[in-house]
Image 1 (spheres, rainbow, N blue to C red):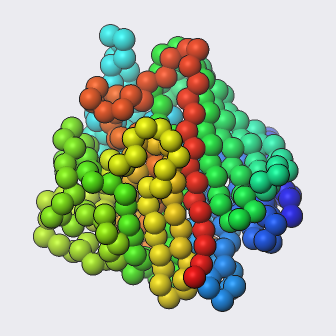
Image 2 (cartoon, rainbow, N blue to C red; image 1 turned 60 degrees about the vertical axis):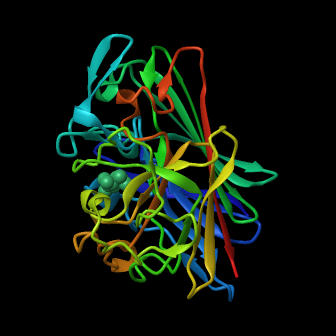
Length: 353
Ligand code: GLA
């Protein structure tokens, strides 16, 4: 039980050593995290027979994380998800962020939080082992205003709850949307596609998107659509339906407007993988969650133990403020001002039965 670390390589000549941390909880289950990108590289939980498997997609080596990859296990920011045209206006000033996703900016720009080195400090807490990761993003980094001090605390609670707490402060008014981009397969990373996972999402509405995946601004009822997961449905059941929203997303790549909107830690999603009995609940203080069904994965994504992650081989549940919030004053605000502290919490609660 506790936190241990070992060298994971370097990002370049003369760069500081990157570490790979292992958090082992009282049940003997491990979570592995590197301070490069605050990436969760492995998360081991038992099935109904006590058989442990690693349920997050990722790589065995730092070099593979340094090469291009679709944000496996990383913290994304400053502004996770999409920003239309890579532009926003705040207090009358216009800011431009790199268009790294067609016409839009995605997950913070060219070098977001997923590609920086975080300061890491292991801790033992009564709840379980923890890792505190800190990063100071310079004023103007990637085009965002204000020096932003951000801290992500990962706690691997003894009852197999993976808690992620974000905290940030800024020196100038800025915008923010930090989230965890883990791809899950509760049958084990690389074991197959995730279309058989059963999902229940506690949301009556979602934010419909255009062909570039930018929200139109509407909050639309899920009723009568393939996006309705208010009652449990298997992920693949309706993914091939003839539906404008699924066509725009290339599958599920949508933000759900969570029913619990008061900022308390509330249940957002429940996922069950019936062949292993593994289940995961996502609880969050955030107003939204992005369901992404791994639509852009393809045979180029070769991960841990040489396993290929094909299309639909992992799903993400990115708890968040709504995409493109800076351009939608009607959405919950993603603005952070000096003197304020940004605090959000998300828990991934694992069980088996
Ligand atoms: C997020 C986005 C997706 C995709 C992935 C990374 O989930 O919503 O559209 O960009 O990240 O590939």
